[in-house]
Image (cartoon, rainbow, N blue to C red; front, top):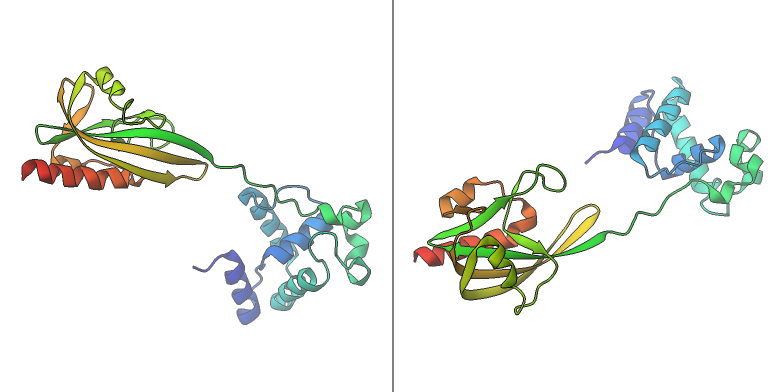
Length: 237
């Protein structure tokens, strides 16, 4: 649980090691002094700033240097449009002050809104087995196993239509369920159906309870995996 900032603060202040302690205050000071207009939330940019701070951290009293920068950001080089440049000991070398860009720096770009995708997922039961298929080798959850599904949130009247594409016929609709899973940039909202079927389904893999446990089904389908286990136990019972 110890990140770069905490490690740097402890190492420099407690043990006198020549390492930077780069927190939000120090990032703001560094961005304004250098006039850097890059997004400080970008990990690559933060690494570059850390490299700059490593270069200027003195061997003598690095802890005092780091504390001075943190205090400068906390009490003088304040966020937004309120920095106290008149009291700043670095005002003469500050690029943001020279350009009048103190309020614009540092840059923190807003994260893009998470995309929502609706999906309909099926737990298909046939002769004590449930259907799975492998995802494509590219993209999200590449190469892992999933329960068959189609894009969109299908209501109960529409949900039987995709079964024909798998050469299956519904025998008994048992249950409807809802689930969601959040990835970094996308949220899946899933409508699920548990049903007994008959017919082909040659493009699907049919697994019994033991085989199901051996397959790599990602946590995005945890709710459906739980229901599949329960349904297979009922089929056996």
